[in-house]
Length: 260
Ligand SMILES: Nc1ncnc2c1ncn2[C@@H]1O[C@H](COP(=O)(O)OP(=O)(O)OP(=O)(O)O)[C@@H](O)[C@H]1O
Image (cartoon, rainbow, N blue to C red; front, side, top):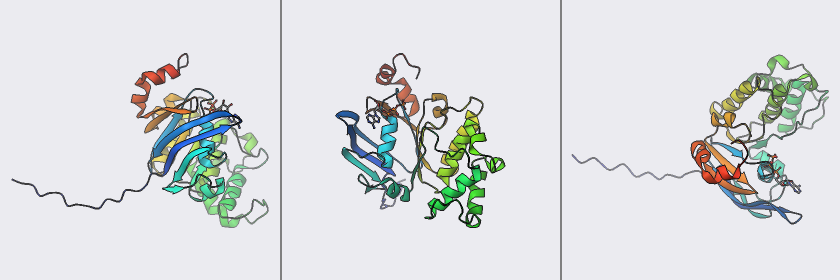
């Protein structure tokens, strides 16, 4: 029996959330990033690994607009934003955290999140503005990040893991679709890693956010990442499923002497 041919559909595939087309960054004659090309699909979790100084943070700086690409193009949802300022990229749904803490020691957890909510709503950072309009948003974000019980704690009183959660909370009030997380486990004690990993997993799997993450802890990444990108001397050495990357001989050579 002949089966009927499947009806032809016009499939209009969405452009990747992020596309890098041969991007490079040269500073003071040094080529820090060299001809990096990749595409990230909506909802994907792409982890960046690579030896120290490989260019991972520089690539995040370039994608978020903190440093200019000296060659190539950066596209968000198909739109060329190579020359766009960081705030213009943030408005299009890109958010990032930094390797070093960006918190104010004398401010409470709730105050951090409220100020971020005000800023995301287009308000100023003035601390004395009325808190009421943001109360619900603050409570929601603190709940999602597991910090509700620490709302009134000063940032200086938080553990490293809680500080990292607060940095994620500050990022989340703007509800970014594409999150760049730069070593979110840095400085976090071994006991706190599982809770932080679970939070990042839920932002990706439950909330559907696209995540790019630099991380040295391979055990953390293997439970999270759809693909691994390996950076080496400013170039993209490999980009594939985690198993394939780990088995790759060129990657192993790049890590010679270091645990992968
Ligand atoms: N503004 C700058 N001016 C000059 N060189 C820079 C600048 N920023 C970074 N570099 C250099 O670029 C290279 C890549 O640095 P980058 O911080 O991006 O690496 P990384 O892979 O994130 O390293 P790590 O894992 O140690 O954080 C390093 O050699 C660094 O010294």
